[in-house]
Image 1 (cartoon, rainbow, N blue to C red):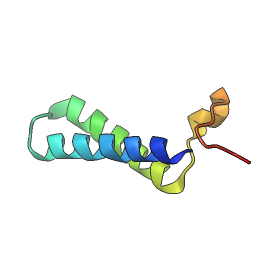
Image 2: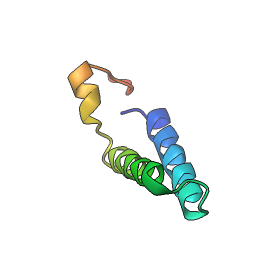
Image 3: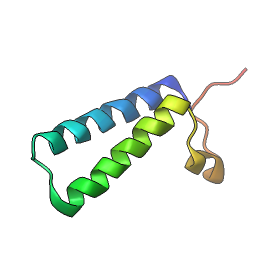
Length: 63
């Protein structure tokens, strides 16, 4: 996973977390988006996305 992809995922997770914390999103949608934000954060921290391997995507430049 490339750095740009990691940064975008972290920003999206932070925005979702902030919206959920402020009560702008709530209920089932809030819980689903919170789980998605957690997955985004986890995959960006470990620099690995299982869906990328399944679909053969690469966002990291390799030598």
